[in-house]
Image 1: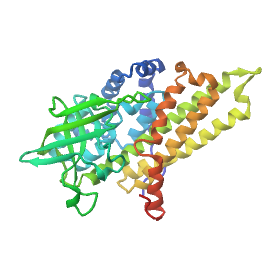
Image 2 (image 1 turned 90 degrees about the vertical axis):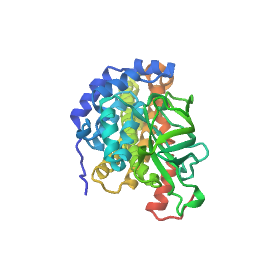
Image 3 (image 1 turned 60 degrees about the horizontal axis):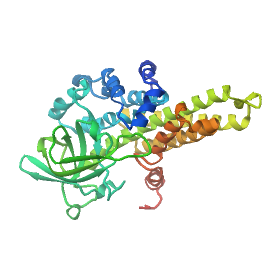
Image 4 (image 1 turned 60 degrees about the vertical axis):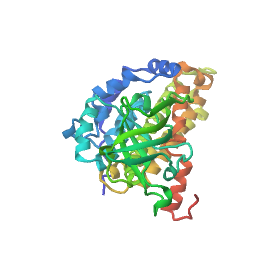
Length: 385
């Protein structure tokens, strides 16, 4: 069994907090206005070795576990930043590390660890499939020593800022497979000077650098196939569990930022000759948000411990994401309410973080789909979709 109380990685947290202090709210506000990518911040994280924390030492990384990666992302969000600009480089590692060949890992991981290559894009979702990953239509057809890729992806964040993409594509038609999870394969795509790839940014309510990607006869070397052809759906599940745990840690960081922000404001904001934090109508929502975030954090720790121990953790990863996303959204709403009109003023950063944390009710998986998963696969209720 995994440890019930994993290390809190206090030294890593302190170091990340110091790094984030160099990128205050004004930095993120300006990026938000310009809809710009936080290049300087990502470079600082890369140079500090934080984005290579999951890469084994033999390939130039730190060789740390998922709990360390979670601590890094939590601190970024707790400091008022946004790890979404670079978090994919952590959770994509699960597929490559567990299922990539020795040659693939030797070729790519040292460059990723050194910061020479960015592995930030995860090409899975498609417009016609949504969260039904088994219904994707992008195809990869084998022709000799290469595959020809044709199709479209959507909500592929950071594609414009990545050198490599982990791509899920169909290598067998749906009418020729026994199970719907079969016939999908994973490829590592080199986006540098790639012909047959078009990337179009999607403007959203938050600065997330997300895109839609079109493939037209893109040539991918057969040697870039990860694992066995047709088993890609199983492979990306490793990355998805890690993704949900890491996103959950970001939500915990957001919740703690909102709670800290609201607590400080409630202590110093004076109305009717008394701090507003003296009123139970202000105190209680802050206290409830705190309790919810602390409880959710325990599930995040549990899921990370199971993942690191190599134990099944789909149930825990999904619950961690659900509870943490709910806790961060509860804290966000409370923080706006505590600040009143000032919660809508950009200079307080509350409205920016409010928009950012709202995403995690929907992505990378909807809270409703998590509930459906728990109902069917954990509680044994009839399948709803």
